[in-house]
Amino acid sequence: RSGKNRYNFYDGSKNHNTVQRLDIENNMRQAVASQIHEFVVFYQPVVDTVTKKCMSCEALVRWDSKALGFMGPGDFIPLAEYLGLITDIGDYVLEEACRQCKIWNDKGYKDFHINVNLSVVQLLQQNVVENVGRILSRTGVNPRNIVLEITESFAINDMERVLKIISGLKALGPRIALDDFGTGYSSLNYIKQLPLNIIKVDKTFIDDIVEDEYAQAFVKLIVDLSKTIGTQIVVEGIEDIEQYNLLKEIGVNYIQGYYFGKPVPANQFEFEYLGKVLN
Ligand code: C2E
Ligand code: CA
Ligand code: CA
Ligand code: CA
Image (cartoon, rainbow, N blue to C red):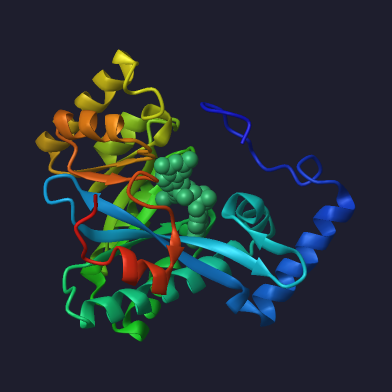
């Protein structure tokens, strides 16, 4: 929220005053323990630039707290990670998204897929592969229609361990996306080392892309690179038609942004976006 090209690491003593933080903390513990349905999954369309069809989306969590009101992920995910509650919330989001994906696949959108965010805290849990495997089989979703997004904006200290986990997740069927590409510690190194299917270029590169030749060159470079190494590119944060036209011209195949649609609840998504040609 403090602007582009900045990182804010969570520090429990600074982000909120103590009373406020305790209030959120207590409410979050309670919600996770007995009101998990307060966490609601919204879906944002991803659009194919050639067909303009919406054949996938990203699952994005919100917390509709009875006590505290409606919150976006920026308001509670860092604290959830800090408190170790992110795994419960993340598992819930994954399960909801898998169920939803199966429903939409069964309605005839056979290849429709859903992207789900995995926090790094969640990724580094001992039993993450078993956990994800259990959720996939319990929901009966076709695992190939699930994409797991892993953010690039963290330092991988133990590459061998992360590689093993990501390979384990991939072996279950889902595809792997590198999220927030270009904002992190070691972008090109991650692309080289991790078994990725998809690279999601961060919004910060798109904000000024119409005027900024450097940003254009950067996206061109990633598109070329992705063709060589056989990954897909999704560009995030497209808000207007100029950005859309430019990215289409550069050769970007998938686009996600307010220009096509904001994250919305499942029923609204089905009505407005599922399998539709968007304009
Ligand atoms: P993200 O994974 O990079 O998700 C994209 C964010 O950019 C979403 O914000 C989305 O609403 C926003 N966005 C998409 N297009 C546009 C646009 O054109 N303009 C603008 N201004 N924004 C756009 P949201 O939903 O607030 O989520 C923020 C972050 O919270 C996500 O960033 C992700 O890192 C995290 N998050 C959300 N849901 C989950 C979850 O279930 N698990 C975990 N671990 N993290 C989540
Ligand atoms: Ca994401
Ligand atoms: Ca992202
Ligand atoms: Ca982001």
